[in-house]
Length: 598
Image (cartoon, rainbow, N blue to C red; front, side, top):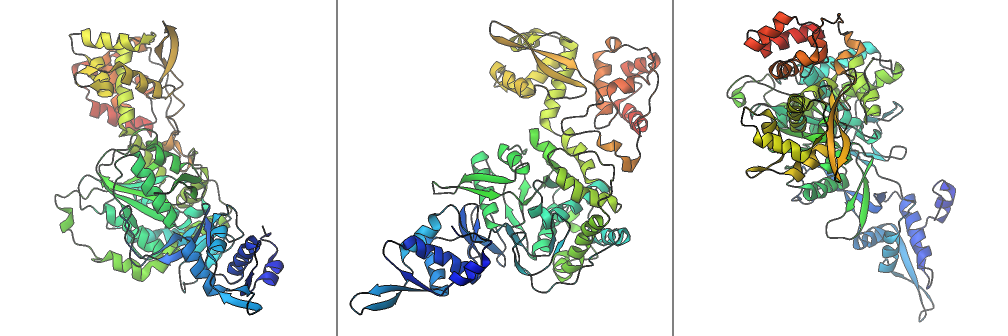
């Protein structure tokens, strides 16, 4: 193959005339590739496939794309011959006339070029309908294909962007973006910041190795969740984003996301989610640079970049398992029964964004560019495992110019994770029934079904592994095994000894200064200047705490940095009696814990 750096050789070999000589079809394929490069024919390589950029021609059943969008489409042999005839003239020796005659591009030449696994044609990373910024903080504003980034900017003229903005410029830019969504009923500043992070991510996702997903949810429909997602699409692409329904299973998830990745859109939306979200495919995509799968109807495996911002919308989104550590949620709450009847100062905000998107895109780029010009000052943010680059560029730039930390929304995501709720219920019951003993799964079930009194253990096991009217021991064992080593409320499950080749399990206490997996005391960020208060031990022993008090303390401390052990240090014996009698409620304890946590 030809060295792509040998531009002089490409120019010398590029010719509209390609002679077909028997036994040298591979050379004809080489010359055709050189011709495409020299003439900028719009043929690229992506994911081990030759592709081109075309307007949307038809609506896919897997993903709905705006009719005025452009998408990345694989080039088949027939289309390649079509392009070849546009840019080159093929000739074949005519023995009768004893000269070369013009012919169409031979199918074998097109097939040879397509079948190769390595080309000199330019790489295409994706399409974007707005200027962007690369990993080094340099702005990319020129329309068309950018060789350094591999991005195709589908834009015409664009308003000039300041090359060396200051922090003051960034603060003004943040205010411009916040004003755009000022009428959306975000429950807190962190939710608004999470939406802004989604916007900035969509503009630069191609340059980030990994990035979290974003969720927009509310307690009631008509709150503006889908509209918020659409606005990001209008801003970064000039049209509504690609939309899809919630996949039914893992197979459908893989099929749909592969179609979206192949299309090259910078973002897509999984809209109106009704079921809990739990997907190994999505977990892999969030933390991997590429995704590999088989094209529908073909045996060929392709590898495509995962550089797409994924947004999910729904009422009261529930994120299960590992996915809860890979997602930020901006929550809305209109606080009215019929939110769809509200009036706004911008009645047609979609059209408003289309008319003014230069202003808002430039504001977003100003924030990121100013942060780069300033040398990426340290904002004292705790690490966000798996998404370090995203945190250093998107999250930090927002916090630097005065926005709330978007990662504060992770508290809500993880608290509402059903997996964590089931594990928490098991831990509470385990401490009461078994303490630090090693236990077989069968012993847990026997204890649960033979205790005729109020039985938190049975409730916990049924929540985890109920199968009809019985507790499924195999299902319970698999779930406990999946939770091995996971820290929750200061405890974790570990393997104990074996009995007749059957695993015993044990619950142990861990250092409470270590946060949840991937969740390291977010509220203790230096930019908040938060510090936990410390006090002397009041002499109350953990073994003196009843099951009722232990449960109340866990509930009171849920979502806070202060652990139930630390909270216990502030309680007197009289306080414990009040908890037992009901004089001190969980809500009152929670308010107290919040004050101690400041």
